[in-house]
Amino acid sequence: MRSGKPIEVGIIGGTGYTGVELLRLLALHPGVRIRTVTSRTDAGKAVADLYPNLRGHVDAVFTDPEVENLSGCDVVFFATPNGIAMQSAPVLLEKGIVVIDLSADFRLKDADEWAHWYGQAHACPELLSEAVYGLPEVRRDAIRSARLIANPGCYPTAVQLGLLPLLENRLVAADRLIADVKSGVSGAGRKAEVPLLMSETGESFKAYAVAGHRHWPEIVQGLVEMAGEPVGLTFVPHLLPMIRGIHATLYAVPIDEPGDIQRLYEERYRDEPFVDVLPPGSHPDTRNVRGSNRCQIAVFELRGSGQIVVLAVIDNLVKGAAGQAVQNMNLRFGFEETTGLQAIGLYP
Ligand SMILES: NC(=O)C1=CN([C@@H]2O[C@H](COP(=O)(O)OP(=O)(O)OC[C@H]3O[C@@H](n4cnc5c(N)ncnc54)[C@H](OP(=O)(O)O)[C@@H]3O)[C@@H](O)[C@H]2O)C=CC1
Ligand SMILES: CC(=O)N[C@@H](CCC(=O)OP(=O)(O)O)C(=O)O
Image (cartoon, rainbow, N blue to C red; front, side):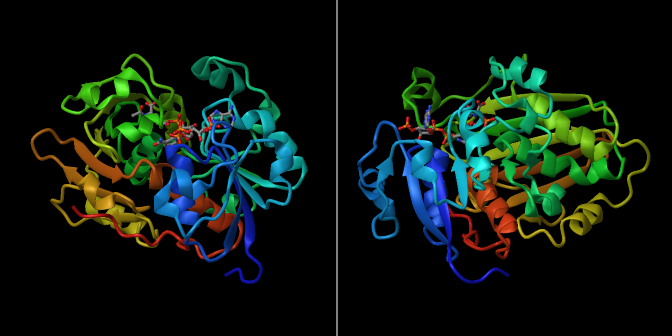
């Protein structure tokens, strides 16, 4: 466990939902000092004036997102829209600063695939192979020595953790996977857009991006690595009338008699501090992980159809973004993995 001088942290995009969630978590982390928090629109304003929940905990003032404002940082988090981190990550890495990107810029390994899904050419394709996909439950050792960490997306975190034990053990048909996943509205970020108004989302429920969502290639990339074979995945995201939370219902067809699936999940995740396999017959509820870095999972083998159904819930802003980013920082800088992440889910 690391001790000594706190590490210096920078956050680009400190006014957004994942940025302020990083601030909430890092403010109580004993091993860090928040050195720089950026905003183009609120530069010069005290962080605690914009976010009074942080009064007395964060004394930083928003600054412009210029690279010069980040020198002296040991680690910089990008909590920015896609396409921003790839512009400045190379300069920061050259300065010896560790980069943890919460956006999707370094998640896909194939630059053409990235350009296809994100609608622009990648600015530094040469870094894609080096970037470590920061799902600690799969890649803990690589994260410990990474310079550039691609923090997973929210949907991909829930789906991959839900299917990992089945795919690693080759128990299900990898070409027939279904992920039916629902998200709270904060997944879309803090922006003024008509489809995100309370009157549009508040008492309604719908699927979206059924024909193709940019998280699909990210999830498939991760599942292929787990399964060691090609994967066929149907992924359908939905927008739920709630603020935080992701609920994934995952369907898989066993190849043979799969054995004791409950035990398989319990053993795979026994030593994982942030994956909680619930007792048989449980139905995980998004509110039980709200504000916490936990993923709660339940697994069922349906007698009628023979299908395996896995339910996985996370808070999209915590295990799906800022919490997982802090978990990655902890691994990278030698802190106890759970430092600053002990918050229990809010109930009700
Ligand atoms: N919301 C979620 O649940 C999740 C989000 N993510 C990803 O994390 C990233 C951040 O998401 P979220 O917090 O929701 O987004 P928001 O839209 O809420 O916030 C974006 C932040 O980026 C800043 N920003 C915007 N453009 C630029 C720019 N050109 N240069 C520097 N800063 C900029 C904004 O501040 P300002 O304009 O003042 O500079 C703002 O602080 C996104 O890539 C998102 O896809 C990942 C997982 C889950
Ligand atoms: C509810 C909602 O809109 N969710 C977002 C996904 C969350 C996210 O921010 O994903 P990236 O990090 O990959 O951009 C969406 O579907 O676009």
